[in-house]
Image 1 (cartoon, protein in one colour):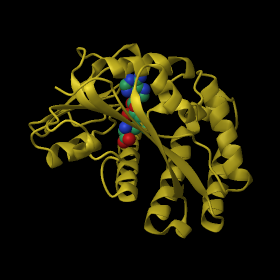
Image 2 (image 1 turned 120 degrees about the horizontal axis):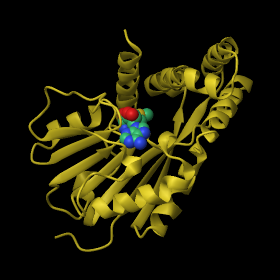
Image 3 (image 1 turned 180 degrees about the horizontal axis):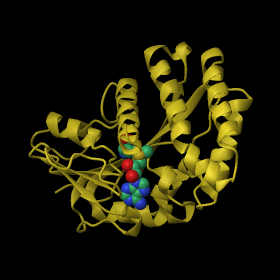
Length: 264
Ligand SMILES: C[S@@+](CC[C@H](N)C(=O)[O-])C[C@H]1O[C@@H](n2cnc3c(N)ncnc32)[C@H](O)[C@@H]1O
């Protein structure tokens, strides 16, 4: 299996973890928005496209667009109401003003340098129709309730990301940032996800996802910090054990907001 396929498998597993945890593909029911009909929906950093593909099947009268830097999504066969686009969204969203009724963005923050958050949120605001909504789902990448291995991995990861200007804890400030660029009805819903058997089926899946995420980050972190890969691997194994034996958990931030104006 190539690294690309491994990453696709990992992202699909995380997609189903979120779905299992929420019991749905999104926190805000599309029916709760003030639009009787969702014409166009955008997924930013869509990865394998699993979210768009499932949503397109659930909402056959809505058009879904997924955008990602890498073509991890299906390029040949896809539903009639779903398309994918390759683009670097940090250079601006390749869409006209007021194109979308709903924008979804999940686990994308790790690719956003802290200083670029306001620009990205301005872009979201620009492409959303008046009265349209955004839903952002992020983790601050802070393992909680674990031992030294969990803390060490978090410390290394945050240090490596900071070399690219990324601060995963910046997602805690999203409600304020959304308000600053003019969004209204901003709500933060903090979910505490258990990692390990103490969280039942979802907890076991979450622990696997945590382990796989740290494993996937290994080349990036060890290169950025010029550190020994073996030491990193040992920490991942120890963290896995901590999640089995301790009451490990982490926070997931769902932030929803509405662009001012009346839905047309
Ligand atoms: C952790 S994955 C999340 C995928 C998907 N949102 C999900 O929840 O399953 C982050 C995705 O963002 C994409 N990405 C990172 N930086 C990007 C950028 N500047 N422009 C577009 N996509 C980007 C990556 O290629 C990757 O597919």
